[in-house]
Length: 161
Image 1 (cartoon, rainbow, N blue to C red):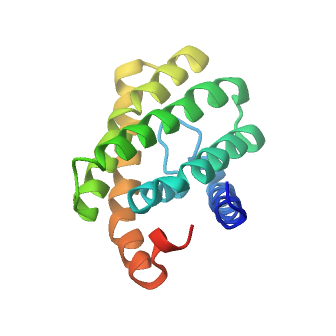
Image 2: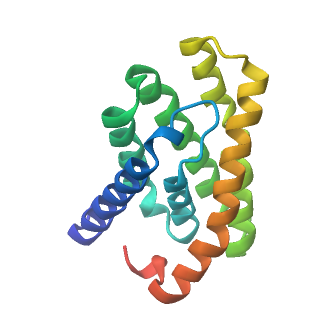
């Protein structure tokens, strides 16, 4: 991995952690609004952002989660799965906005892993928890589309890594 790629991924991870820390109480319950999830859209622009996002999720869950062991497995696993599906889809979905929309759908759907985690750890009802966590993810990722799209016009994420 090039030094530039390593540095940029470190910055992405640090930003993910910092933004997650700001909204900490709302990032780990059955109603989640983890605003840092917007960074998941970075893989739409360049798959190399995968490492920074996953590292950010891992460290956020390690330092802030009240259910560290569960979150390190389920939370990181959900991110790896959803990011991988989105990266793979880039072969078939050429439009950036279409990929961001697909990414939002993938992350929203895969929140069933987080619902499963919360069902195991806290005995919360699975379907209702999936609904609430998916709704939060859908809102954050949908709001993230125009935000990240506009930022890309100024920063050009594809070229930064």
